[in-house]
Image (cartoon, rainbow, N blue to C red; front, side):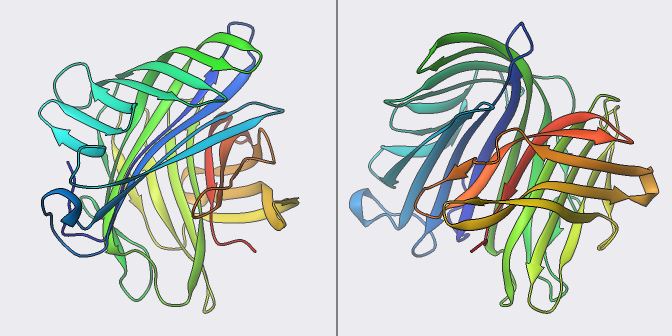
Length: 301
């Protein structure tokens, strides 16, 4: 459910998908809530603003769209019984109790998708039982994930409709103080390895140094918080996107799990030219571990 006493919040779903012939795709569905003041109110006096982002990415296309809504008038929101998150006709909704089984839909003038998600593992609490520290000075968020969705459905693209299957990852996060004053942006990785293990890792870039952390998720679903600095991410190659230089190939290391991998963007031009622009797209993983995942990068100029 929503937490209107906090300044920002999101319901963030990404999925790595494939056609039967192995052609890869990625999709994103995100509902953001931001508060101009704490709490709720009726009608147009409601201080909550909602944003929706949807995207489909292939090797040669990155299609995205944005919706904006005011809280209090029914155009966007979240309910818990049964769960549903929506903005206009974009919706993430439970098909059973909780969020274990979801339907996901978005329609735009360029693309649409209609997907079914079934969780095959437990929820994961990041940090200290869901309290995820983001800086040495103590900025933090409440943060958990459902990284175990099996996904199936259809993508309607400019070239036609395709049937896809794959893996999905839902992030739930809320906070009123996500970044320290000197932090400019972040690089966030959600990776699913062929071994069944998973990794969430992030780098928060700051003028006084980077802050890194994350969570190792074993194949059985058990989660271990990583100590600050244990997760390391080094850019190997960059490209120009929307007038910005953005890393699109990374070297990631995590010594305690003997991880040393390269992460490569499926489509280097996966730029979200939305109200607050950022890079978001599917990635492949090779090296000590193989797999796939998603990468989000903000704060690049």
